[in-house]
Amino acid sequence: MIEHWELLLCIAGASLVTCIPRVGPMMFLNTEALPAGVRRWLSFVPVAVMAALLGPDVLVRDNALFLSTDNLFLMVAIPALAVAWWTKSFFGTIAFGMGAVALARYWGLA
Amino acid sequence: MRNTSSTALWDGVKRALPIVLGYVPVAFAFGVLAVKNAIPPGLAIAMSVFLFAGSGQFVAVRGAGVGAASVVLTVFVVNLRHLLMSASLAPYLKPMTRLQKFFFGYELTDETFGVHSTAFQRGWTLVVPTLYACNVTAHASWIGGTVAGVFFGGLIADVKPLGLDYALTAMFLALLVPQCRSRLHVLVALAGATLSVGLSLAGVGQWNVVVATVPAAALGAALQTREKAA
Image (cartoon, rainbow over all chains, first blue to last red; front, side, top):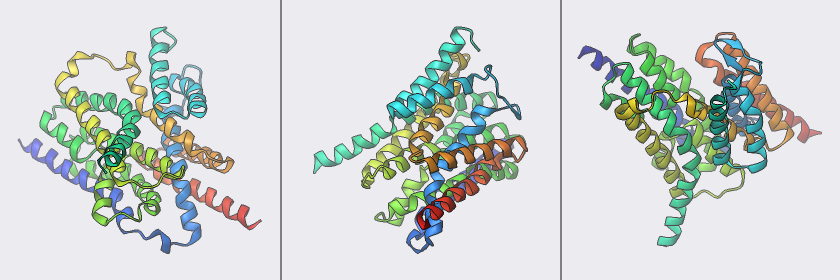
């Protein structure tokens, strides 16, 4: 039971430290009062953060750079980028990516 | 009136559908992992309700043995990137009350941020029910996937043959591409990805996303300022 208490504490603490950064800036930051440079910086945050999330996902495996045709996640990412670019469809891109990974494994390519 | 508001809600649900496609398998995997790590079903589901943070929840489940303080600290670092996302949405949310922003921000994830931010950049005019409908749909699918994983995890032995382990990667990719609106944005994306990869190879642990985003976005701002001045 002690373990469960600790877990409960863990969940409460983790929820709190997740919630504060999510709600804090949008609730209390008056962006109009910020200098133009900072606002410009904020406008580049979405593209920078999505790229920073994606990069290691497709290029790093077991703490090493994984640049190889054996890297299925990378090999699928390349056509998936093209699908995303041409179709502009979130749903289509995600379905394509997951489907391509499943097919490659089914055919024994990876 | 009724028509307008149900259209607004439906727009939000539609906005969330690609997220649902990605969330259900990831939440399912989370449910399976939680049970494997001897976490009671109720607590695993509570995590999906109150935390609603993919990577944060995986950290919490894997680290259940290392002590609460260390888990909370890691989750904090992992989710610090939301601070930047929340700030970058702030200019678009001006007409909302603080309480409305709280309920919206509570369900801010990488993916809900991605779709809303893309919509705003495409010139979408704020409709608060659409924001909520999208977030609640995404959250519900996350909870539903967790419940399925906790109780029916045995039905799917391995998610790999279905490509379900690619769900999050495919989602980041789908969310990144529409952000690349100009050559400058592509450059910032390359900088962000390179820095993030370099930092994670250097072993900075969970800090890589936040630490890579700050200078990559600054590069974009600096180059844009120079462009405007020229």
